[in-house]
Amino acid sequence: QVQLVESGGGLVQPGGSLRLSCAASGFPFSTYWMYWLRQAPGKELEWVGNINGHGSGAYYADSVKGRFTISKDIAKNMLYLQMNGLEVEDTAVYYCSIDEQGRERGQGTQVTVSS
Image (cartoon, rainbow, N blue to C red; front, side, top):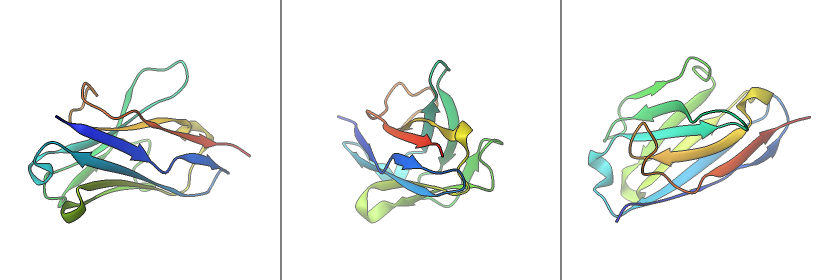
Protein backbone atom coordinates (compact mmCIF):
# COMPACT_ATOMS: atom_id res chain seq x y z
CA GLN A 1 0.00 0.00 0.00
CA VAL A 2 1.00 3.65 -0.28
CA GLN A 3 3.54 4.70 2.32
CA LEU A 4 4.84 8.25 2.67
CA VAL A 5 7.26 9.31 5.40
CA GLU A 6 8.27 12.95 5.78
CA SER A 7 11.37 14.19 7.58
CA GLY A 8 13.56 17.26 7.87
CA GLY A 9 11.36 19.66 9.80
CA GLY A 10 12.56 21.74 12.70
CA LEU A 11 12.93 25.19 14.20
CA VAL A 12 14.48 27.87 12.02
CA GLN A 13 14.81 31.63 12.22
CA PRO A 14 13.06 33.91 9.72
CA GLY A 15 15.07 34.05 6.52
CA GLY A 16 16.50 30.60 7.08
CA SER A 17 16.27 27.44 5.02
CA LEU A 18 15.15 23.86 5.46
CA ARG A 19 14.90 20.87 3.15
CA LEU A 20 12.07 18.45 3.72
CA SER A 21 12.21 14.91 2.44
CA CYS A 22 9.49 12.37 1.73
CA ALA A 23 10.26 8.68 1.30
CA ALA A 24 7.67 7.04 -0.92
CA SER A 25 6.86 3.37 -1.42
CA GLY A 26 4.03 1.06 -2.47
CA PHE A 27 3.19 2.70 -5.79
CA PRO A 28 4.89 3.54 -9.11
CA PHE A 29 6.56 6.75 -7.99
CA SER A 30 7.74 7.88 -11.42
CA THR A 31 4.19 7.92 -12.79
CA TYR A 32 2.54 9.83 -9.95
CA TRP A 33 2.16 13.55 -9.49
CA MET A 34 3.26 14.34 -5.95
CA TYR A 35 2.04 17.12 -3.68
CA TRP A 36 3.30 19.09 -0.71
CA LEU A 37 0.58 20.35 1.60
CA ARG A 38 0.73 22.16 4.91
CA GLN A 39 -1.53 22.88 7.83
CA ALA A 40 -0.94 25.78 10.17
CA PRO A 41 -2.47 25.82 13.66
CA GLY A 42 -6.18 26.53 13.45
CA LYS A 43 -6.20 26.59 9.66
CA GLU A 44 -7.24 24.23 6.90
CA LEU A 45 -4.92 22.05 4.89
CA GLU A 46 -3.25 24.18 2.20
CA TRP A 47 -1.69 23.22 -1.11
CA VAL A 48 1.97 24.29 -1.29
CA GLY A 49 2.92 22.84 -4.65
CA ASN A 50 3.17 19.75 -6.79
CA ILE A 51 5.43 18.07 -9.31
CA ASN A 52 4.74 15.77 -12.24
CA GLY A 53 5.65 12.10 -12.45
CA HIS A 54 9.10 12.46 -13.93
CA GLY A 55 9.94 15.60 -12.03
CA SER A 56 10.19 17.83 -15.07
CA GLY A 57 7.56 20.34 -14.04
CA ALA A 58 6.52 21.84 -10.72
CA TYR A 59 3.85 24.32 -9.68
CA TYR A 60 3.62 26.45 -6.57
CA ALA A 61 1.19 28.42 -4.49
CA ASP A 62 1.68 32.17 -4.84
CA SER A 63 2.62 32.39 -1.16
CA VAL A 64 5.75 30.26 -1.69
CA LYS A 65 6.65 30.91 -5.34
CA GLY A 66 10.25 31.95 -5.72
CA ARG A 67 11.17 30.68 -2.25
CA PHE A 68 10.30 26.97 -2.34
CA THR A 69 11.45 24.32 -4.82
CA ILE A 70 10.03 20.83 -5.24
CA SER A 71 12.12 18.05 -6.72
CA LYS A 72 12.04 14.29 -7.17
CA ASP A 73 14.75 11.64 -7.14
CA ILE A 74 13.11 8.87 -9.12
CA ALA A 75 15.90 6.37 -8.47
CA LYS A 76 15.53 6.76 -4.71
CA ASN A 77 11.74 7.21 -4.60
CA MET A 78 12.29 10.48 -2.77
CA LEU A 79 10.41 13.77 -2.91
CA TYR A 80 11.96 16.99 -1.63
CA LEU A 81 10.86 20.47 -0.65
CA GLN A 82 13.65 23.02 -0.48
CA MET A 83 12.44 26.03 1.51
CA ASN A 84 14.43 29.25 1.45
CA GLY A 85 13.61 32.66 2.84
CA LEU A 86 11.34 31.15 5.44
CA GLU A 87 8.78 33.41 7.06
CA VAL A 88 6.86 33.13 10.32
CA GLU A 89 3.75 32.47 8.21
CA ASP A 90 5.35 29.28 6.88
CA THR A 91 5.02 27.66 10.31
CA ALA A 92 2.93 24.52 9.81
CA VAL A 93 2.95 20.76 9.66
CA TYR A 94 4.09 19.79 6.17
CA TYR A 95 2.80 16.70 4.41
CA CYS A 96 3.62 14.93 1.19
CA SER A 97 0.69 13.38 -0.59
CA ILE A 98 -0.31 11.59 -3.77
CA ASP A 99 -3.42 13.72 -4.11
CA GLU A 100 -4.18 17.41 -3.75
CA GLN A 101 -6.79 16.84 -1.04
CA GLY A 102 -4.33 15.00 1.16
CA ARG A 103 -6.44 11.87 1.46
CA GLU A 104 -3.30 9.75 1.13
CA ARG A 105 -0.53 11.57 2.94
CA GLY A 106 2.25 10.93 5.41
CA GLN A 107 2.32 11.69 9.11
CA GLY A 108 3.79 15.13 8.52
CA THR A 109 6.82 17.02 9.78
CA GLN A 110 6.66 20.17 11.88
CA VAL A 111 8.26 23.36 10.58
CA THR A 112 8.48 26.26 13.00
CA VAL A 113 9.80 29.63 11.90
CA SER A 114 10.50 31.86 14.84
CA SER A 115 13.11 34.23 16.17
